[in-house]
Amino acid sequence: MDTSEVSAAIRSAIASSTVVRGVGSGTWLHGGPVVNEAAASAVRPRGGVIEYTPGDLVISVHAGTTLEELAATCAASGQMLAIAPYGSPHSTIGAVVATASAAPLAYEDLTIRDLVLGLTAVTGTGDVVRLGGKVVKNVAGFDLVRLNTGAFGTLGIITEVNVRLHAKPIMDHVVTGTLVDAPNAWVLRLVENRAPLPMLVRLAPGEPAQLFARCTGNDARASALRGIMQSYGARNAFTLGSSDTSNASEPESPVAMLRHVPEQALVLRARTRPSDGALLIDAARVAFPDATLLFHPSRGSLRITTMHTDNADARIAGFVASAPPSMPFSVVVEQGASPIAPSSALDLSVKRTFDPHSILNRRRPEYRDMAVV
Picture: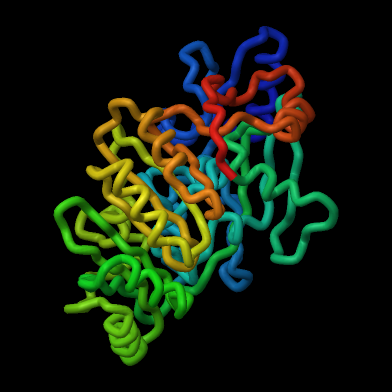
């Protein structure tokens, strides 16, 4: 559907009191805080490039364009989208913006919120709103682009997106090494040095901790960065392969390996101060001993993935309760359980403003009242 067709579909849904569900490629309908109602009418924005001027490092696309298609288009001009989010390369850019999906080893540690310059959305009244623009400095007043980024389509169905691109580096590799010291030691070293390049620490049951780093530039710089990794405690550091996001769908790609999310897994994203990273990791290992952990040292964020989903709510509650009272701590359920915290009065007020008929993506009602800061 193009923007006008999405608008017409929403107005028709209002008239018939039908719930609408915004859908991209349909690869992650079971994740996030939105309930996948069987009676909901699916609205699928179309794909395709609207405008692309390589000299401006900006591309405008319909929201149904997949990340794979976007990467192929930009690669012809030696450019790329700086992130390749967790999940499938068949995900659409509209869904990535709507969910504010996190990305492992993103170029220069950028997030999707750093890259979206503007978007077009259709609100719950059927009105078409065009937000932001096509240049970096274009926001005056309330930043409604960022408001819709990560709103899971609850405020409007995104139909068009303008994103900032980056030139592909001459060399772009993933380097890995084994961390042999205790977590407290290497977390402290990574945090003290502010993890000067995109890094992730992978901790899997029964395996040694593994440090991944994205190294860009030239061969001399990559060699120097391997030395830096060794100074942090990484042993046997070597180049694993290309982190080229245009090839992220290839099974052997290190980016594809890190991006993979099992469909039936419980996935949580926790965050604290980077300096409290070791405490966060210890708490996660106690609550989820069978989970694979990905720790982002410069952000203090921890991604927890486990296939053992029995008593998920109780295990999450135990994890939250185990955090020291003095530690700032937040947890988001990405997949496999109920959302942790209820919507605030402000959230509900904003939702009513953009969706007064309550027909757009409805959030799950089973909230858990936990003391999460």
